[in-house]
Image (cartoon, rainbow over all chains, first blue to last red; front, side, top):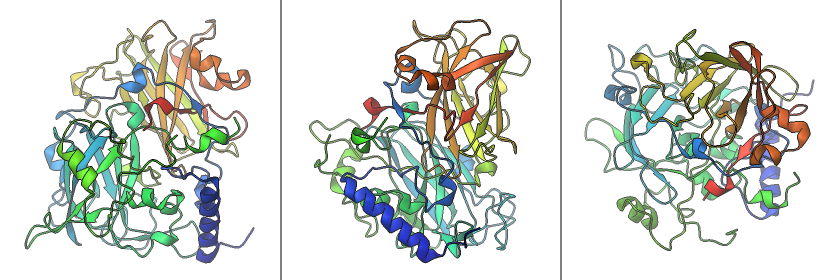
Length: 254
Length: 222
């Protein structure tokens, strides 16, 4: 067995990967599936080039969700239990649009997250931080006619994970989104501005391009904050398609 | 392509709280703006290990009720590059109905109405096995019958798309423009083969020997 990697080892690996990406010239806007600093990726990324194909009707359409599927109360994660959850109450609001700026209307958004202590309710989460009996950390909403969404929740805490010694994830909320076509399907994570863990996190850093990474960081919006009640964060989401590495692909072997 | 294209929100200053004017203006309208480059996509991040209390739902794998007339099982095992079953993947199925129609019906998350919605979601079990109850998709045109599968997992920074082409026992292998463009020795990874009277098997291998053909849609990308 090799020794457990340190944060310095992982940080060095991240920097090497990003230097390689920079040398290829055109950074991808999606993360690299082959990104060894994120250890779980090593055996789980395809080694063959993805096969390019024109989307057919199945891929150009997307499921319809409706009010039968989502209760409006599911967008408030702070009212799912008899008591109030602990932590910093926040509002997360934004719009979901496609690449032409068209709103993604009446579509399902699902979120899940750790509680204020950095603990998921999931049974496999062994982090010795307290569970909150008043917080499950699951929300759902349908976007409005203008693509807008709004969640009320608790600011999640950062948490340790087993990737390497002293590995901590920056605080984040998982988002699952459907677009105007199934090719626009996206699962991602929203982060909070100014997190000191960004540079150290191989999941966040698996996106080679700084401008693309920045798009995952919400904006604190004081106009969204509600006096005496909650702080507001704004995060707009652009869904444009499946292609991860179409710029790199031009030179890749098939 | 556009290596020097100005990236409309690359300079979006997420930390300071200033919204980028191009994005703001476009979001204010609801139509594409002529002559401007398209907005840049939000990057993917892994689904992680802890989606289990959020994404799966009762009835998710059952596009039709089990044992209903015409129902079939679509199932398989997800494996990693060492051949080990992946115990924490989740798969989505999107397909036409038995007549080849892409329906637009709500009710995928609450199937109470008994309407076929074409969408399902199944988490794998501890042995990496998934299972949907559905109908064999009808052909949407002149081509073969297939369903779209989307796979998410811890360790996978960005989901993977693939197609499951249904092949009944004794039936000739399907052909279409995608299949004919795939190397012959990999084509079989796209076939969901009938393994019992009411079941089709579609294993997914993320890496290495027998690696499943995964898809990309450059024409859809911006």
